[in-house]
Amino acid sequence: MADLKAFAEQLVNLTVKEVTELAQILKDEYGIEPAAAAVAVAAGPAAGAAAAEEKTSFDVVLKSAGANKLQVVKKVKDVANLGLKEAKEMVDNVPSVVKEGATKEEAENLKKELEEVGAEVELK
Image 1 (tube, rainbow, N blue to C red):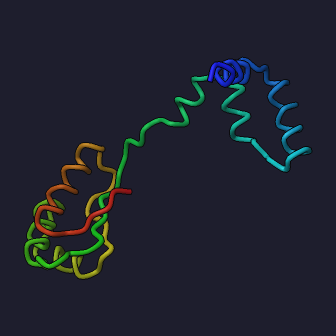
Image 2: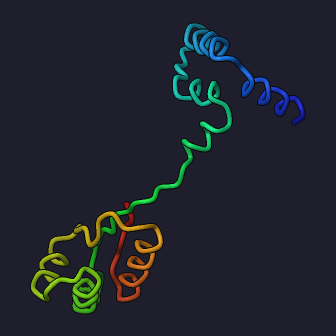
């Protein structure tokens, strides 16, 4: 385990030139093209954190109304601020985007509300 930590530390501290040379060796010797990994290693730990940055905007997608279609239509009407006819059309034509560009908290709350009445929902 200590050897792996030392190796990881060496990788993180490589110069851009060394990372480029390592990438070429991996490509020539093993057929591996580590372009994205090389950029992350060359930039150091901050690049890894940026790559793993959490998504901030979500679409709430209705996949199925389930067994309680009427309840789902009513809930879609309320959460999407639609008329009853428009909400029914949305539920009838799944998959449908109920809300675009929602924050994480808003998307999770909408998903929870819709699932409580029997809908199948996905966040994208």
